[in-house]
Amino acid sequence: MAELHIVGQIVGATGFEEKNLFCKWGLEAGLSWDRLEGADHGQTHVDHPEEGEMAVWAHPLDLHYTCKGLSGWPKLHFQVWHQDIHGRSDICGYG
Image 1: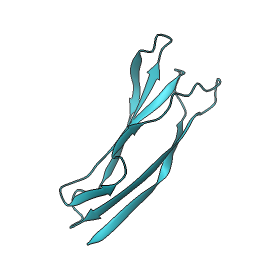
Image 2: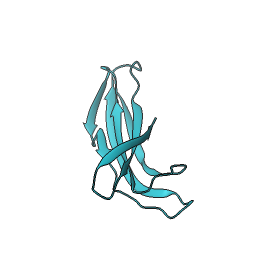
Image 3: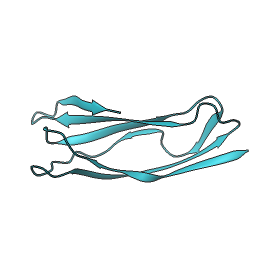
């Protein structure tokens, strides 16, 4: 059985007018894929970058999959959120 190791990080984001940004992420895989280790979804901390600077999260990713076939290859999706001064969150972008 073939294996896939996903090791990396969500570095950060640029191009948002809002401050206090965080990222919710998830990984979806088809029926041919079984996750052995690692979280398949999560959330970064909130970062407040200076004007014109990148929001830095440096959030680690470490997953281990086995597969019986290549259909349903894992896909990573992101949502960038903004948190206001009252702790309320609104979505700013996704991909």
